[in-house]
Each structure stands twice: as structure tokens, then as C-alpha cells.
Image 1 (cartoon, rainbow, N blue to C red):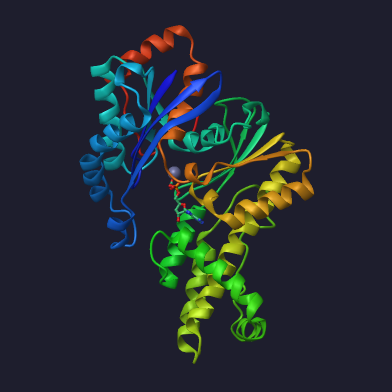
Image 2: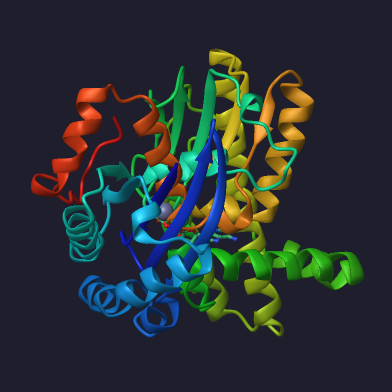
Length: 371
Ligand code: KG4
Ligand code: ZN
């Protein structure tokens, strides 16, 4: 079957067509129109500006997605759209487009939770050797995005138990806010990652200067809640610790401020990774998952991908580690179509029939819960 996916929950207008054949999901097209440059001027996403851009771009993106995939509207079997959570003005554009297309083309429509989409990005086949059977249940999924930080336990498809989550900021939000404090621009995640990599390479080349700076100014940051017994997270204190450190540094006669900022970026990234990994391993020791997955925009972080892999190999050798291709880590619509496929697969005939009329009832919901 062919599924059309639509995603407009934040600042990417994304449309994708995927083909599903006995649980093998192949991307036919995956078009993303990013608004990063527009929002960078404001240091973050402005909801009404995002909505305007979605409105402007959604039809051209739709046309490109069909052209690239080489299919016609009559070929598609299902429309899946992000229902929430997200910015309501932004969500409404995608939901309205999906409802209109469902009505006009007489195709069934399913609303998808954005995080469910991120999780199902792991089920898209990126290389011919990929086998869906590799992802055995129970699955423990570490969800790390701009709006969410959760540990989700899945005993079967579409079954989500949140066993831990952030009590304040999401980890992606902490990356973004820290980057702003350090003056590294928007979006913060890739900027921090790039500076952290620079620190690592400089560190090996020029260890002495580095270590002296490090010692004098002490870039060490806290690892919030790393020792708490639960599986919850907290990242707002980490960001505040960076703020205090920078304020202190600005008063000092530092010769190489840029180098110190680089050091703080690296230390912040490592602090966040340490907490994420420690909680994931702890949760895995309790719940014994057969598969550990990574999902959400922060899963594009190379250090997190690599270090989690090393920890799993060392501490949980029997668990399989699955992570989304980089191109499916941050927001996209292929992941929404993928989740749509699994929802459709589990639906009894009567509900599938009802999905033809979902255009009448589907509501975008900024605070939709994962269920
Ligand atoms: O999933 P996503 O694209 O949108 C939301 O659902 O929120 O995640 C966006 C978040 C942003 O906070 C961004 O800074 C972060 O993912 N991000 C990264 C990286 N790439 C994106 N964080 C760390 N390292 C990266 N390479
Ligand atoms: Zn996302």
C-alpha cells in the first residue's frame, strides 16, 4: 500500500510518500521545507510565522512529493497526518490539508501523535538488509526531541508506557537555550554538537593550553538527577548552570573566550548525554527490553548515538540497538506515514471504513497525549 504522510507541527513543512509491503517500509519521497532561517532571526520558532510559511509551502511541497515519488493521488491508500502535540497554528495547516485531501480524494485519514511518528522512524527501511523482525519486543525507546524527553516501554506495536520523562525542559530545548546563552545561534542542537566536536579535536592537538584553561575556569557542569532512583529527567538546572558559568567568565580577563565557550558546549553536551545514557541503562536493567531505540531530533547527535551504542554493547550485550537514519531523526513526514501504516495494520475493517469519514472529526490537538 502507499501512504501519504503530512507533518507541520513545528517549523518544517514535510510531506512524504512511502510504500509498505508486508511490514517493509520504503520511502518514495521525503520532502522537507525547513523554516530554520526565518526563525533564526528570532532565536526560536514563532508560531504564527510558522503557520504562514506552512500555508505558503504546503501545496508546492505536496506537488514535489508526488512528482518525486512518481505516483498519482489515485495510487494512494491512506493519508496520515500529525494531529499533535505541537504549535496549534502550525498543526492546523497540516491537519486542514489532510482533511481536505481525504475528502476530495475519498481516502481514509488517520491522525498520528508526533512522538509515535519519531518512534516509527526506526521502522523505515534504509538499507536492503534491514529486517523489521530485528526490532523485537519489548522495546525501550529513549525519546529526545525539542519538546519531549521520555523513556517509553513498548510491549507490542502502538502500546506505550511512559516510565520516565523530564520534569521541566526537554533535552532539545536545553540544547537550544544553552546555545543561545553561549551565542552559538539557532537551532542550538547542531551548533552545540559542532562546537563540542571542535573542542575534542583541539583538545587532542593542544592539550596543555586546554587543560590549563579548563583547570582555571572549571567548566564542569552538574548531571541533574543522575542518581535519582526513578527514570525521570531534569534539564532546566543544567542550562541555568551554564548561564552562571558564562556570567562569571565574562567578568574574568580571559584571553581565549571562544575556546572556553567551546569547552562549555562540549561539557554541556556530555552532561546531557551522561544523564540520558545512565537513565536508559538503569531502565533497561529493570525492564529487560530486547531492543533499545532512539527517537526524536536529538537522536541526530553523533556523540549520543555513539556513546549509547558503546554502553549498550558493554552493559546489555543481549539487547539490540536500533536508531533512525539521520535523515529521519529530525522532523519529517515519512515517520508519520510509517506510524500511519502500523495504525492501519492493527485496525479492524469497521474502523478502516470509518477512517474514510475522519475528515469530519479529526481535530489538531496541541497537547495530545501519547496513547
Ligand atoms: O524532533 P525535532 O526535530 O522537533 C521536535 O519534535 O521538537 O527535534 C528538534 C530538536 C531541537 O531542539 C534541536 O536543537 C535538536 O532536536 N537537535 C539536536 C541535533 N539536531 C537537532 N540536538 C543535538 N544534536 C544534534 N545534532
Ligand atoms: Zn519532532
